[in-house]
Length: 457
Image (cartoon, rainbow, N blue to C red; front, side, top):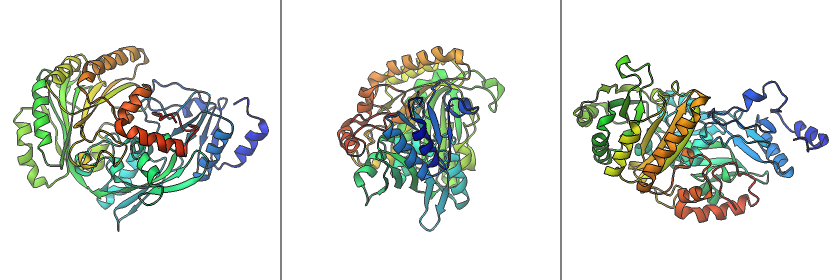
């Protein structure tokens, strides 16, 4: 930022309500941190936006001075795409508000909110918006990429419940997008990531969800092939009210019983939104498989949303790889058994999130999400609090992914990707990439917003 004239900088600061954090400020090192402790980038300045006017001023300043711009909502992105070296970070954490409309069951959410704040606001009204599985995740990043979670089979992806968004575009203009206004842009942001502008507020459709029946069941890792084969048939024939993501994992410690600690398992985390009187019968086939651990009970929806928060605080080392899958055939099962038996650290894991049910009943072209015909969004995460484990978790993750990739559908959920190159971005949008490219050329021809899974104009 040394090249920017002092006069220009002073004029910019006068336009802001929020604070600018510079490299020589005492709070700089703390402020530049993101969720993934493996990301260590040093921006030239961080603009802590207090309102939409700050966002507009920051976009204009960045564009006019040819600065690399990164946009940070919750900072959860695995690849660290909410931060950059030497450039300008537009931080949205000051843009927080949640307003519930109980007459229409809609929720207006600020661009800087976290999902736990949305759950906190909607739960007293017996409502929920489909989101992820960790409540400290930012609303913006998760939504713009798609949004998979406990309610996907019942109510679809987060993007399927997005009704409207307010946006600041690359030229500094402000627009509201919905099914009637800027329809092309509204289509693009439902899965196309942060390529098209900065969303300062979202309006979602909420659904009646107060309590759920949920929690984990565990089997020894040796039973992975058997459980996966059963799971595929069971879940694909189950009512939409039942969701369960399957995993290979290590039990790291409390709150699980001591005899399970540091052992590998094949597990399923369940979430049921239907009538509790029907659950016992529906769940009988699960219990018939004799899990070594089962803790499935009724709980408030925010509780299942935050179940993993304590296990994964900010600052851990993370490495992610992902793919979509239609089937869990024998070859896939064998690789999950092999690599699930060799998990390198207690917090590393593989998850397969179901995206059938309601999520599959949206047309392939209705949103940029190109894999409505897949049954699962798979992700492998190497995780450790210890920076010395970075190579170990990365190598395990890459090897696991390379063994599975030949059996995948070819692309990945963009929120589960690192910086993996243009070919992977195109594969993840498949037949929808050309339309996204046309919209990018219309709204951001100079690629002002490029610190993302980038659609290069």
